Length: 136
Image: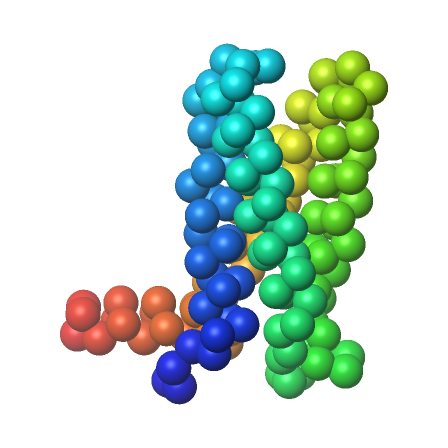
């Protein structure tokens, strides 16, 4: 496997940090508290970084169009839910804010993360190759 490019490394770092910070913002802090807002703003910044770096990544496998694969559809998904979630909280629509942010964590972090671990994807190949080598 070739070494990680700076763009892939930045994407991976932001995505992993968002995966860790998300539950703190969503479930680990009292809603409306200073710690909730701080964790939330950090998570939003990490999601923006993850989506921005993802937009620059290209894949040239079988299911691509101009270097974009179906997983790239998560970039507008993330942008939409971030904007709608932030708009909702700014307008006092707390339940709508909660739904957007939880949906974004589930879809943008957990589902996207699962797709990156599939065989044939860079991280998936890295994980499964090392796992099977350890088991062999």
